[in-house]
Picture (tube, rainbow, N blue to C red):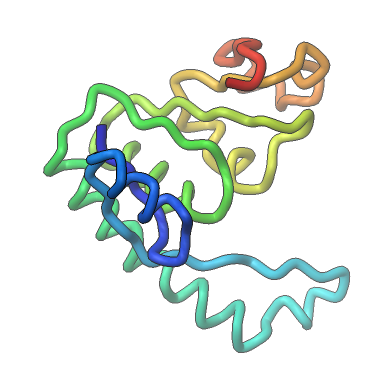
Length: 140
């Protein structure tokens, strides 16, 4: 097991205490706004510039660890890791804990070998092109 996350996350402390290797990647959060001009904020531009760096870091981690599968649970940190899995040709499994897929999982869904969803009611909300990859697992 290798855990990939951000340096700010609780994961770094928890994985260290449990002896699970942890790697940090740079990533960026999109601050969404109804006004598209406000999306081009300095913070968004700065964060989006970090994503390619994070993809390179995640790719290095994935190719070095050589996992059988990558599990991503959504959120902005999942994007570099999911893209790295695709680049390294490692199967990607997404898990969505809410009824509707979040932005990161929606963007990665087309690359996923499987999409684990928590509720049967999620299935009709998925794009038709990815429904065959979906399986209802509930929340762990």
